[in-house]
Length: 177
Length: 177
Image (cartoon, rainbow over all chains, first blue to last red):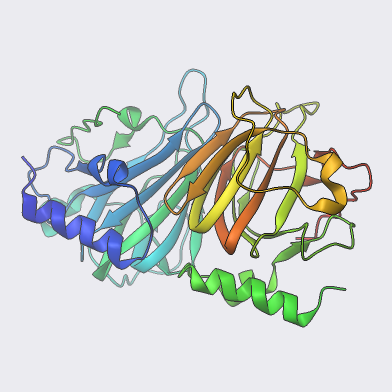
């Protein structure tokens, strides 16, 4: 059960970004906790705008210092793995990808409880107006700054239920749409 | 030549919507006038966020009562015609598509000067938070309300130079990117 307080904080962050949403969209928010029972630290809150067989767009919220756990989008039988562009709309997000990097000092840390399941090391810092594209099959995780973050995602079609998470304890239940 | 006054009004409308853009994006705006020498009435102002071989996203502005001329996205050799979702972010947009409709009264009219090149009759009115998906090969045009409009477009890949316009006078010069 997701608390009403948690839901209100997520909705408030969408509102703070000035992004206009319909009531139906607010009622459709997927408060994904990945079955970790650690929603304050590890979660992702998602409004799905469109997901057809050609493209997908979402508006996502991370509460302050909240982290979306590390995962990748694998190739599927009839689709190459999902490619996605994150565009920060409000706040700040620290994105880590499994790509070559010389930088070893990071500005934020993964959640202490499950830090062994965070392996991607290339750091990309996005503030409002910045964006970054993540190629298929690349492990990535991302964490909001101290005020939280609102992030638009533009991508190839989404099949969230097939995402491959580094943490074997994760169960990704995708909300019925 | 696009006047500095025109550019300033477009940029101001982006700002009014509270969408955060980088300076590079503002400097990249495609002020498309379609070669019609009628920019106050017929134009579209576009910021391209991403256009790769899998998906595309843009942020578009129409000034008050400005119209994007009727066109369709044809099938190309290796791509089915572009499919696109318009999401109104600010203001109001009247969208007309060449789809079946029983409605014959429209809330707005096409530009008088070239009204014979506006044939699509199904009316969809979008205010902030509303969206609509246009299928490939469907003729469409759209006009802003009296305050203008800011519209996000999520789509399959864009090949703007191959768009097919109803008005044979149109020349679509796509800005180098």
